[in-house]
Length: 96
Image (cartoon, rainbow, N blue to C red; front, side, top):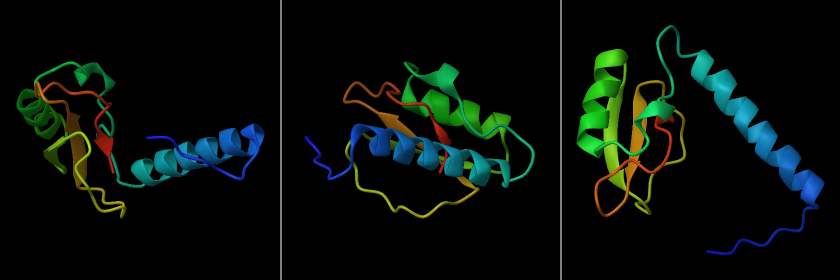
């Protein structure tokens, strides 16, 4: 899917960085405990969800097929685990 923007490349980079910084700030406001799991990319989605919930008891890990629509709100108790058709994790699971 191609996205078009009226922003310059520099504005796009700054926008992406701002989004990343907001996510870091929100995730750190969720309290102690792990907030992202980059080491789980490539794992089976269900196994990854169990590991996430074991490592941070305050979250509910939800396995979703890539492309599934989701809400855009931020919740400290939710981790999306994005998987492909083979049920392998394709993105870093993180509190969203």
